[in-house]
Length: 448
Image: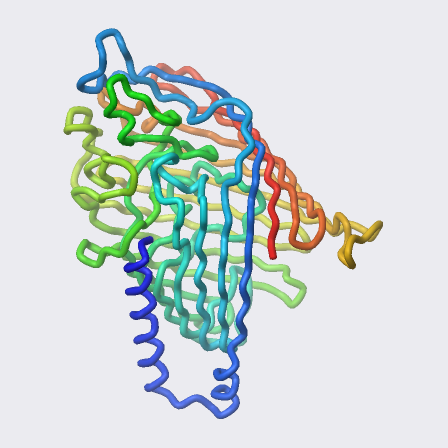
């Protein structure tokens, strides 16, 4: 998100906060607390060892200007073993009791979120929002009825935020990996039933590899003769890409959810949310670093020569999310059914993780050495119930896809951990043959 867009969101948030404050005179103790907000700042850095299998699949579409005898391929973005720094993050959180909260989070380098990988923005305002009222984490019981308003750029209310692996499932990649910009409303109807609603810009439809690196598609290097991309295209799926700038001129995305939850003081909880979204796709959406447009422009293919079987411009999805917590065990499940301008898709994802607190054996600088370990297993499946055109630009867009991610996160000391994980893919080509595009990822994360 650009600097000007961020400034507009902050200005809107400030105006809303002022209006809310003018409507109701707070108690004296609340006013005193408001003079001394709790401020927290943080820093995070991630470095990785990545090993990606090499794969290539013939593309039927022949790009105009391609030298005679040359063919195009979908290929692994960057095969082999690599050591890379993917992320430096700064964030600032502010809270005034339960009444007001705000966050600003900026990512630098942002290697695994850049799309195209080599030409997208290397600095990204990942989150910037202001919330008036109380909104608890999934499974957290409120004291009673209440409501909140959130404005800015923030994550979708149905997605998994308590993540245990660095990778993403194929379903979370496709539908709700990235933050959206707009307004979210919520209401607790007592302690166990709640409502959510949102009016947002809507994440543009684009394509990316579901492994760590998104790949390069529509970059200036493709216009060279011969093409000379820094990175390959990846084996791609359709997905909701990142909102890069504030756009209030188009049709907004409307979302709503109804939830039910139970919990206790020990942290054991169950939370079920059913939800849906709807918006009209734009004719095109400009994205940084690529000459491909998002939304309908992408579905039409280059120069309209390889159009997917699109009908209309409606994007609709309904789904359900489930959170379970018991002692150190956590489970997240999600089902999504989508109609993308007449292209039906459905996805199912489930993740099980268990955090074990380890006994004190040694300490470094007053901090326990190896305080906890958390193994995790995720299964996800994406079914695409549509066919590619005969001259498809990216045949993988219509392939059914199954992905299993398994790994373990080991805390070294407080604020430092290592995650080792493996992504095993299984996708089905139009011929019925099964192929994979597996990847190992080791991550060292340092937090302050």
